[in-house]
Length: 322
Ligand code: SER
Image 1: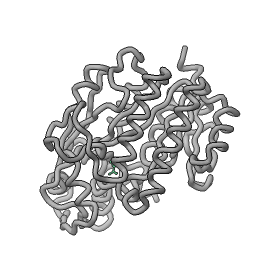
Image 2: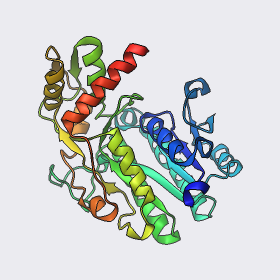
Image 3: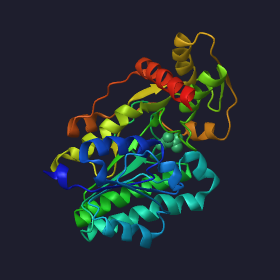
């Protein structure tokens, strides 16, 4: 029943997650019930699985709220955000973009103008004072990056609005997301996306993350499935209203390079770490996501080998037809 009545808005809809989430949601709810906004020019939204696309700065509260009212939006996937690398370069802008629209949406939900919100957090909320491996759901959070600070604050606001006003907001701490449909932008884990483009285009890649740096990663198919599973779960099953840990995979640049080499033996990797190395060093290597498994049945399909194969096959086709 609910499937027929949900009217969905995705902010940041032309980004790495939004591009794939919108297609999936359009399959489930009908394209006419999926709306998207982002900063990008409308020409970039041609062919997107959306009932309607509008170019919009989501920090423009009035524009966003009018859109939500006009189109009778019930559910918002609020994906617009500055990632870790970009946030370090523009700290105050990152704070504004990553927090203000979220607070606006939480207010709308409090006033019953929307029913449900999804908001992505990140492994960037973790920092010093905890073990690097299998980081549990409830640990001290000491982020050292602007991005991590904004995500931690956002998590706490989500929990506050849920506890105080009953707002149904759900969140996942995404690890690095790997995908071929839309490029990532400005993240520390993005080396694991760039490497595939460079492997196909140049046969070699210079990584801005150095050898031996393991980070949590996830293939986009698994990330989208997890997101939809969380959003479909009965509210009373959810014990976490800050944000759920999601682990997925954990690997180093050389481990990923070895997987690529298995398929492309001539592939070569070299290392020139930049400012993002310090960000990576402050993050965990792997994540314990047993709470998400228990609460809403999180599971994954792709290991590093299956992911590498799928990335190379699909990206090759995409780049060849570009
Ligand atoms: N992929 C993100 C980043 O590197 C982590 O959430 O910024």
